[in-house]
Length: 145
Image (cartoon, rainbow, N blue to C red; front, side):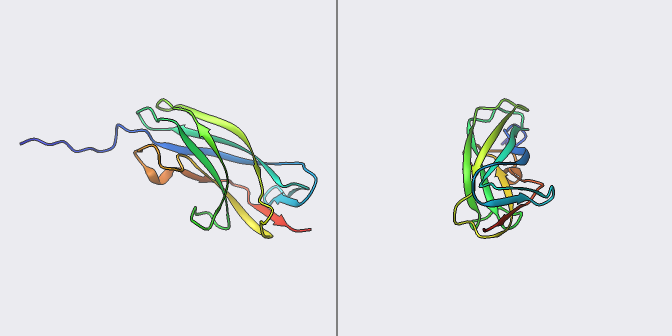
């Protein structure tokens, strides 16, 4: 008898390696990035994001999704803002994009976190399924006029 043990070492591993918020000027509403204390009349977030395959096998195409959350953990209470397509990524390659995220009109006043999750639909079987999400450093403060 013989057997092998699959350690998962030969698999892709997708994760968001960076997510940064910039504010974009629009006509109504009021929103600010808390740490920078930047205040703009804005309902649109401009986000720079990078998804990387840190595994040692190619990752098929997937989606990275962005959520508005009251805390730093992604769960069913979070609001999906948008998803973006991520192309097939060779080992250690990455895909970066600048994305415009519109705040939902019904967003309550308060402080929020932006969470970016690579392979959000779990389409790609990965070495580590628990490292896909990253929280933006700046919080988002939403106020109503």
